[in-house]
Length: 64
Image (cartoon, rainbow, N blue to C red):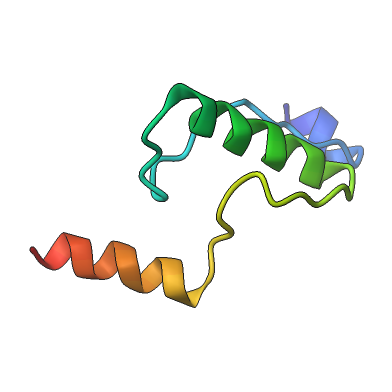
């Protein structure tokens, strides 16, 4: 993996993120696919982007 990244490659394991609290398997898949497309510069609205609003939602949920 070090050789690949040193050569400019990207290691991209399809690890789902749960910070946006997906309710269906389709939302988990959309998030992984959307992130993969981002790597090619193809931005979609398949999943919520990590921004200040989403960050605050996660923080407020942790405080409960």
